[in-house]
Length: 235
Image 1 (tube, rainbow, N blue to C red):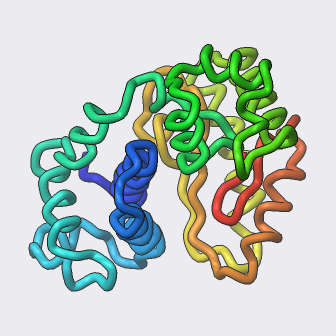
Image 2 (image 1 turned 180 degrees about the vertical axis):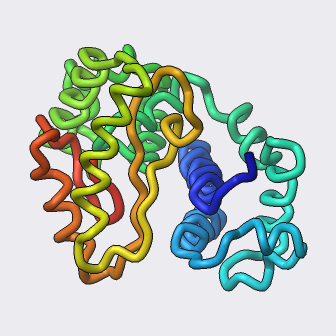
């Protein structure tokens, strides 16, 4: 199955996150994140640009990132992504699943406390080390711990048919909202895997409507707890 705009954007965003975990130059991080945003909001099918080898015609997609996308489409792997997966400790990558942490703070904690596993992170939250770091504090530490506890409690996968009922309900409640330009269910659900760990719903929308869309989502009847709500993502 050809890679969709959302598939490729997700890969680029993963590169951006891993770069932050590795302490990479912030301009490179921004370049990949902006490229992901650009492709998410692209009205055309990105496969048209890939087949014509003219990805650089898209504003914000430079030659290097274009080559990474071509490689992904041709081989199923993005070299820069694989390189950073090797570079970043496996345990640290799992931190990206912790709502409310984010790659920037994950790197700070990893670098300053010398830890890279979730168990170590829990210990450092409990002994006050995380709260003592500049830019974090007790409130942030408590929020991170709450997210970890939630992950451990609900770290279960459900069948595709069960996920479909949830995804369809939330998708339908959002698609007709004002400002929605494009909406798509992504991740393991879109790929049709037998079991689903989480449901990703991606929306391209006018900036002025983003907050109201988050409100619709976080106040939905199927939502039992809001783990985090930022500028571009809610969980």
